[in-house]
Each structure stands twice: as C-alpha cells, then as structure tokens.
Length: 129
Image (cartoon, rainbow, N blue to C red; front, side, top):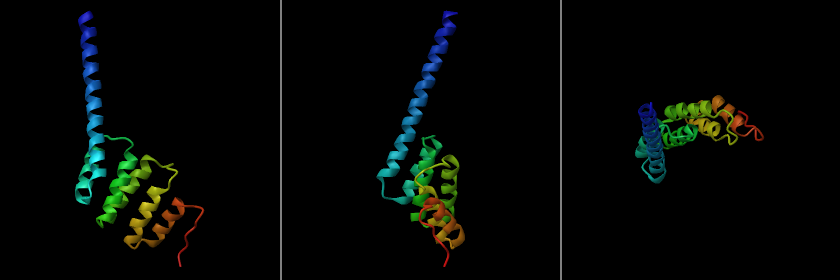
C-alpha cells in the first residue's frame, strides 16, 4: 500500500513539474513575440504560445491578429479577433472589436467595420456617410 501511495505522489509530482515547464515554455514564446520586430517571426512565436496553452489566450489571439494586420493578412486577423472575442466576450476594453473593425475596413467591409467600431466605443457612434 505504501508503494502505491509513493507511486501516486511521484506521478503527481512529475505531472506538476511538466505543467510548470509547459507553462514556462508558453510564456517564453509569448515574451519572444513581444521582443522581436519581425512580424513573420512574431506570428510564429504567438502561434507557438497558443499551441503551448499560454493564458490568457484571448490576449495572444488579439496580439497575433494585430500582427496579421501589419502584414496585410486581414482575413487571418479577423479570424483571430473572432477567437479573442469568443474567449473573452466581456472584454471591457473594446480592443478586439476595434481591431476587427480595422481589418474589416481594410477589406472594404464598411458596414461590418462600423458595427464593430460602435461596439468597441458605444459612446462615440460611427455612422455611414
């Protein structure tokens, strides 16, 4: 019985160490993305942070979406902004909606962009001309 208990403690300890290492790796990918100026590399680092389970994921998706906008990959940016909104629908900053509105505007989706801008900042309603 004592041996089983020791085995359980050993396995739990190893899993705890693995989870801590996994989280450390995810944080490192996120930090590397923040430190580089190369947007293509930045996207790769953000992707690795997402795959590694870095939390909060909504922020990573938002940051990668912003990088996609810089690269002119507006559809990919919209996909990432959508994912950020799904993960954090009550974000009080409106940044996800504002960013998605910018990407939609660049694709000529003006009505959709206006709707997003109005969600991002309801006190400053944007109207179509």
